[in-house]
Image (cartoon, rainbow, N blue to C red; front, side, top):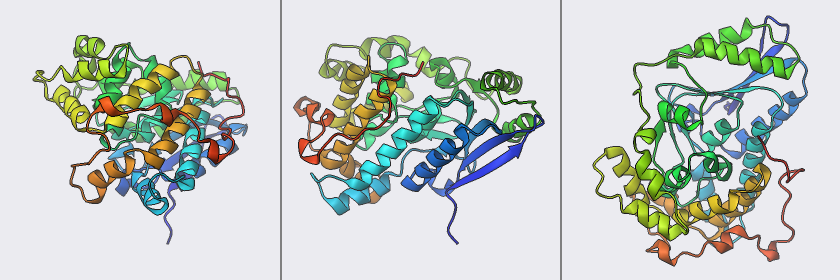
Length: 379
């Protein structure tokens, strides 16, 4: 029997309409996204977009360990092995194109979307969550953009949402791949509500008993009231965010005129004793030099781009990372032989030229159109 990777439900509400529930259904792989899952989510959201009987949409992950741990990087590795290094990768292009279209749709969706961000929310999972109108975290939430460890880069719209964090923080998070939890997400504005892990059934019950209408604006306001009534202050979480506590460090180190300046400043924090900070510095020190340089450049270039153009830029970057970057080597060391000793192409970030990662190869023909309106920007 073939397992359904995305479960689709319509739950009736007291208002006579429905809550659409989409469940990522690969709990053994922490609900990592593959092309089939992405295409299913994209098709269903498009179908519900103009459906008058759908009032609210909810995204969550099966199991209690993760909402979504990111993209299926093992599949990307296999596709690179099949096509070969330096060669155009059609499978990867389809995956990234569809994933970014999905993320963009969530950012610009007319109906309210709730994401239940329990457990691991990393990479592609954060891409699904970042653009949702109502984002819930729990005490078990663990977030990160850890691409520094595999030779990719913080994608799925990170050029947009990392640029909207306090100055210096986007570069610091992207270059260190450091993880954060619910208190941090709330402080950074990457989440809106804190609920206990046990409140998932209560959320569904509250949504089903609500008097939603066909008016999206009204439904958003009613949803906000419902979530505020469920939101809690958990004793399991620290009162102060780790990221807020270390603000002076990342604020100073994460800003600079060049990528080399910022990387050098962050690595100069090596005398810190905090284990959380130490792990981030280790990630940067041992991570892909290409990724470290790409993080700075994507944020620099993306600062004044629209949301759609950020995704278009990231598509080029992702395609090239599969073509000639460090991605295959990073995945090999992390997941294939688990040596955790990648042999990066460049021994130092000082030797990396990232300009080619931002250009479409002329030999490949016309640049694909990612979005119908490349000038549209979310607010």
